[in-house]
Image (tube, rainbow, N blue to C red; front, side, top):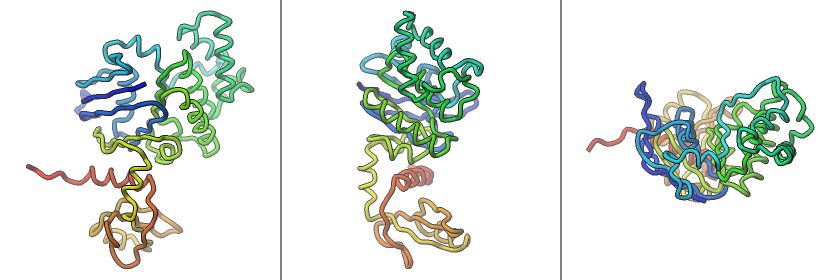
Length: 297
């Protein structure tokens, strides 16, 4: 299966340019779409999901025109948006059965089998008769995946699915996504670098509506080998001085001091040590480079 996005652009009436000539090719397995809040990720996901129109560009899924043949796409698509509505007093069993009818599964026996299998798959069987309003954040997200899997979709889009989940719920949800991706293509849109690092053999980084990088996380990490340097500095003044003179890509507090990470071909100065690169370094380096002023021709 192949999803091909070519030259996609979108500007909202308030003047915000959410997508700027985005082109991507997404194959089988899990694909990570990484970017900060406001990067354009949700706009791209909603456009792929046929919920809004771009200003220009094309999207095809295995030869089907996503923008003009919406009904065909919706039959093969599962979508878990950042916010999805449910009837809070309904049980998961009843709500999923209701959604299955809307998805076209009208045979009662088939619908019962499908709903029960999905509740088992998402580890919600023991809570199937509980009202959805009583579910934790992680349980609601797992229910969201259950409804997205109705109709055996070939493409599943999940938008910021682990935001706000505690570590245990996040791990359960990521394990569920990983098991699903063995059978279908999953696009994981997130600002959480760890989600992409743990799950995705291919990824893209976008910011400000622009595509900054597309490729394999491992290849991106290899490109930074020997070029990431770390130093701990105790004061804000020292941090600001390094930011003014070096290519600082990130700074984290460690025991009340700043651990500064710098991108450089050779040692940037006294006290720096070479460290292994991480996907966060790839992410922050691309964001930093995209924020630099572009030369005027």
